[in-house]
Length: 68
Image 1 (cartoon, one colour):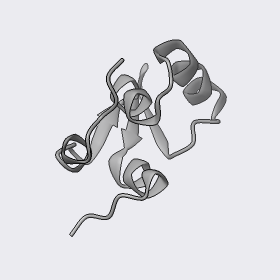
Image 2: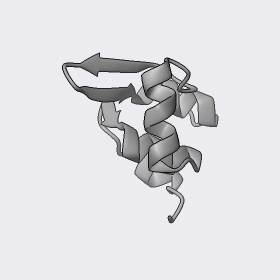
Image 3: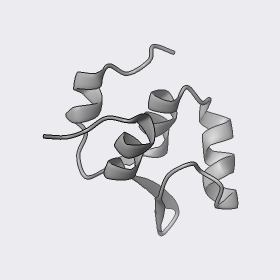
Image 4: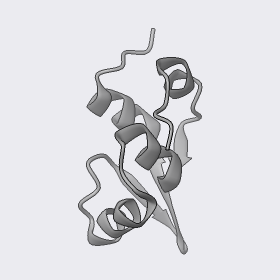
């Protein structure tokens, strides 16, 4: 899996899916979903029905990427 560039991270919408956040963090898809299900994902995850959305601002903060 190819890591995400800074430009890709800055272009993300307000929330993103778990697969995209996992790619940014260098996590595998299965492990990322497991962490989200257990409430242990390293940044804020919102559950909407059966889907999970990761808050992009938290993801960027975790990775040390400033917007501005």
